[in-house]
Length: 112
Image (tube, rainbow, N blue to C red; front, side):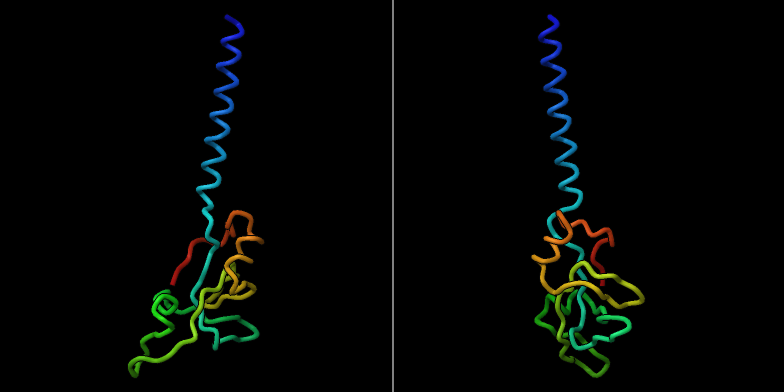
């Protein structure tokens, strides 16, 4: 009787531990934080200007006040974001995942 109780407890611990591990992995995801930025807009004090996400998903075009204008937009990962600019990140998604563990950067979700 005592042996079956012990076995039940150890299997409960294993299953509970697996649940905690699964929750931790899925909460971070495998994608690092990313911002769509204009590569041509780099300012040495602020970084890259953040543009609308659609600029990165629609072949680098963004609408301007005088019609359609070209923007050299690309995803910028794990950056410090402040006042509409992103800096100290990387354009390499794989590098961002490597340096951020499971993709947890602590800087929130993507925006635009």
